[in-house]
Length: 344
Picture 1: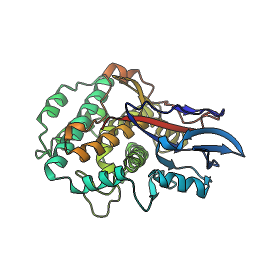
Picture 2: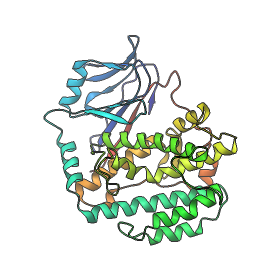
Picture 3: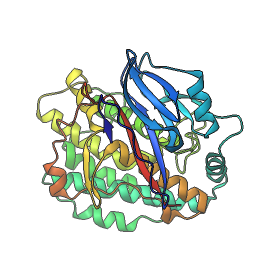
Picture 4: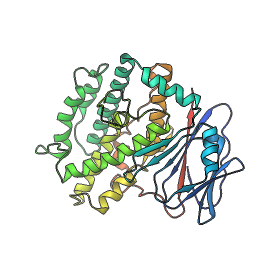
């Protein structure tokens, strides 16, 4: 839900379902304060929106020049809501947590840390299957034959010991980019566009992970000791094909390097609406829902609780204007409150 300039209090959620509301501050120069049980967002002393403090599960700040009051930080801490501060690349660099902690977040991090290998391997299987199905949808959207990918997805076992993910990649890249293409993280051109797009999506997943009360360095598969965002690198996998599809469309339009047009397109990708069973869902909200469902899977010890993003049909994906997604907030769309139901 994106709020405009007029103050617009949000209704409290129904008591039948607990709600997680993540306030995302993405516009420079905003001032955040607390007043009579509300978080107020203002610009030049003019209120642009508010949300009840009791409904907030996290506040994410990834804009420049944002200020806030001590009263607000204290009010959020009392309610156990973290403040996530992001750097220039939009990846989290610090988290303000209450000293006494929040029972939900403490439980999630403890469950994440204590998750056994069987659960982690089952979760990784689900991530790999989702990624392969997304790759198939992208190939179908460009008119390629993806029949083999459905078979590959069915063959993925717990933990992917047969490395079906790599087998799918060896088929996927030539079909998407041509026989001469080689994925090279140090190269420019198409590889440079992919690298930039993945960086944007990785930052989005890292914010979603932290806001869901999980520790970003404890992954289910990626486990490099020097990787502060291992879990984000797990969660990003199903979203990578969206970046791939946008890269193909940019290349078709003559964009051969990371220029301002490419940066705007990749930034707008996070607000692209994805068709789903419950209507359209922005990519950013899909990442948050995936992270929160992953947190529930850790808490209850059941991989079935995890809901990775479901790919649209090839027809839906082909019909989406991926090459020119919404490029972000307009003057009247200055901050967002993402609301998701927590059924646990």
